[in-house]
Length: 274
Image 1 (cartoon, one colour):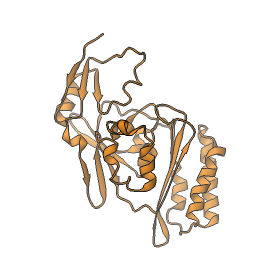
Image 2 (image 1 turned 60 degrees about the horizontal axis):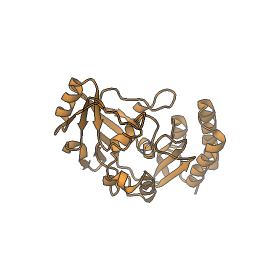
Image 3 (image 1 turned 90 degrees about the horizontal axis):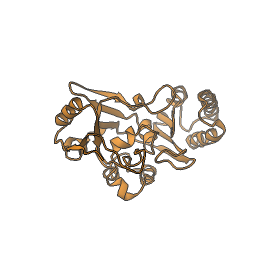
Image 4 (image 1 turned 90 degrees about the vertical axis):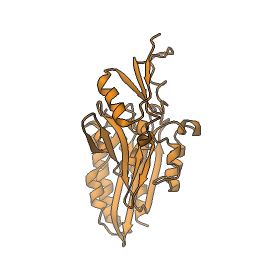
């Protein structure tokens, strides 16, 4: 059994220095997937481990008039009473993640960055156009959450960068649709979630997103644009056109069952016609 050197950095610069210095370092936030990633029943640890729980910046939640920002080490339980989990449907989705004991330690950063599949909250944050702030030793930059999706719709890694914060705009959500599809979501089941968000301003749809994510992620940007600026309630003609667009794009992906997904998208569009 190997012995690991464990570090408890107090600041992000201190953590980044460790990352740049150590070639094989394991970052531990909530560690809810750590055991699952072990290849055998005998635990194997890297030579260097860094625990992020003592870095205040990674736990802070900031809110302005237009934006809310979470530290990547915020636990899922800490998000229960803040946007967007003030909405009953979003709160219900959050409660489907494991158990309350797990949510007390699982971090939002680890949840979004889990690279074996897209977990339960990922499509919700993707619908909200979440921005991810990554830090490196000499710079920081912000990327859209779709940066984590490769050309085949699979989750891809962000290299040696550190995810420090997650930012989402504060939107007035008028219609929200969340549907769980298939079997177990975590960790690595065959299920997925379909999430759609819509905002209406003066009887006109000014925001619409629909994301499907599980083993792979799916979004049709052109279909969304066809709905944005349309009048509300949505006309049957536009709804039918959009449903046809989704049918075509789903069949082109080859990794989603269009016959299963299209009726669910139809339900989203029917809701916008009321």
